[in-house]
Length: 307
Image (cartoon, rainbow, N blue to C red; front, side, top):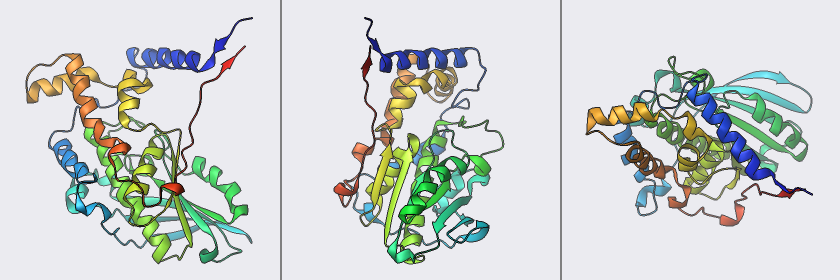
């Protein structure tokens, strides 16, 4: 009888596939235009302000007023899509590409009960999730539980994707930090709208993979307790881009050359160390403890053996 460790087998196959895709250039790599220059320095300063030692961690979310249109409506439920100007401050707004200045959101809600007696969960995008459909399918069964679903389209994704960007392959390292920082601001404002404008009694935020990391950050930084559900999420982007499959799809040579222009020539190992340092800013263990830790549910995977 042969024992097969499926987890290790999947890990090896993923890395073989990732290496093949990168080396054959079938798919463009992440960060082909380098680190992002002054934008990266700005983001590093801004994100450090989110950590526990800074007193401003509980700042009030910005108010938004989405403009809604009805996509469809039945006797029991409705789907609306809305747009609003991203609530980021001027510094952050100037760093974002113009295409990402307008946020888009889908809102799937039951009609048989008042908002005060139901809940709403904001679903955040994982890497490569450019549209609403996948997360709306997750939200559809929740209608029977009187739980509404709000789906945010991430900056740099879908209609908000910069013209020169292909798919989910962000052009600069600074874009990854921008995506996360803007997502935090927009989600905090959506939760604030659900609470104070729509009148929902209970609220939550969830996400898969990258979306789970962002959900954990939002749950940490929202000024009042909110249910937080990260699904299959690493504790930081270091895991994905420095240890996981995405390291095969990262433009390490472009990053090395960019640093050589800015500073001095660096080895690949030094470039990867710098990437770890930068992406350590996305480590959720450095963020404040959520207001109600018992309202946090982590959904994780385990590795099992099969004979």
